[in-house]
Length: 517
Ligand code: FAD
Image (cartoon, rainbow, N blue to C red; front, side, top):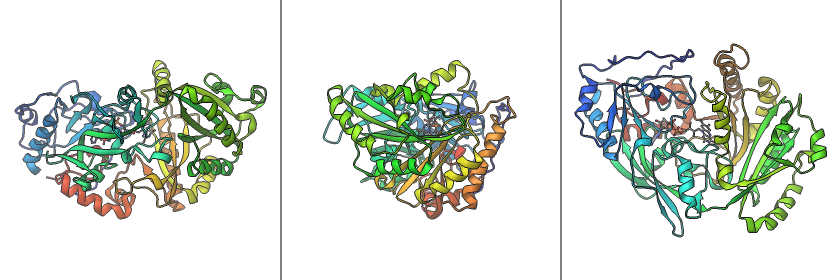
């Protein structure tokens, strides 16, 4: 099964529609799939949406889309393909909300399973000492937030954007500003129900089928399809104090960030971002943030500068405002930001967590959401973050007009290292996310080609200087690169593939293993 897979870059965003797959051998696949007794159904036409994702760069047309109504629909389909053995190259991709970046939830001439149509009994919240919610693998995090809040509870670890599915983020990690305290989302799961690559339905947890449990978490969809997850919950607050401050020196900024994630500070969320040569930045913030000192803030100019913004948030209930204001003032007095750049805001908890959705609505209205997104996400060890920042923000990236660049440290002591996710080997890591949008008709610095080349320069710099960086939401063309990515964990990854998906049926869009025949 370990055959390197070639990538295919379709920058013209068009794809050929083929109804007879080249790999079907002697099987008439649609007829054979129609023999399955299902609660849901297969679509063989109007399935172009399954060849699209948020990245909008790779487009692989499947042969069919399964709209499952039950776990048994998923299990029967996979069993059917498994039983065909190597007579067909047919593969299966679970598609959550399709917000992958490089075709990871697609299956060329295979079957895409539309996980959002999986019908489960309604979400079940358990309000015990260690509260949790049982949800479908195709559930969106935004729905989980609304449901759990009815019980005064909420998940503890998030992504910045909540219109993603549980199965999609748990296959990666799920990292946001809460990860320094609670670890990523994959460390906040008690139990999973999984359909393996042979169609077996298994429940797994730290105590039961633990190898499968940890394999699936961060496992890039390689070992099974998550049909149910038990997510750990904490008490929810109603409001959020949201704070931004600016720095001109990277070292002062990162020292303050590291101080905040390692001390027993009261913040619930720590992130940060880089601003390179932006005009009128603070004026833009004024629509949602209030400057502490409006006169001094109005005199501050970001033009021509590289600035670093530290972003903090504290969750609270309205009757606790006074106590938290005092605590936060004390903590802010320990930081070394530019005094005139303290900006504050208070927003409801849901609005804070769902903040990227507001940007989505604005971008959609301008036709700027469904453009190509050549994103690059990296995990950089703390010992080399200064070298990285100096070269990348000083020489490689000349401005960030193509999109935000996030940068924040995460304390790995809070992470469980038994999952499939690989990270650099240091206690503190920085997540650096280049979240670029490309203008599809441009050949200039906002065009796809330029941004992909710039991303490659960043990756080349990391490789040349042996920075010890790892890609997050990784994307590679050859199996050698995957092997280097996993390093010492590669052997375990391959063993798990042989154990849980021996024919390499699952998640072909990750391009790690190729189904042989
Ligand atoms: P899909 O794209 O549908 O699938 C992703 C992969 O998981 C595919 O390989 C697919 O086959 C597999 N998969 C899907 N469902 C299942 C399942 N039930 N069982 C097994 N495998 C499955 N990530 C972060 O960590 N932090 C962030 O803050 C963050 N912000 C984001 C903001 C935006 C606007 C976007 C577009 C993405 C962001 N991401 C973030 C990345 C996101 O977590 C991943 O792209 C995630 O995979 C998307 O979830 P999805 O439901 O769309 O998954």
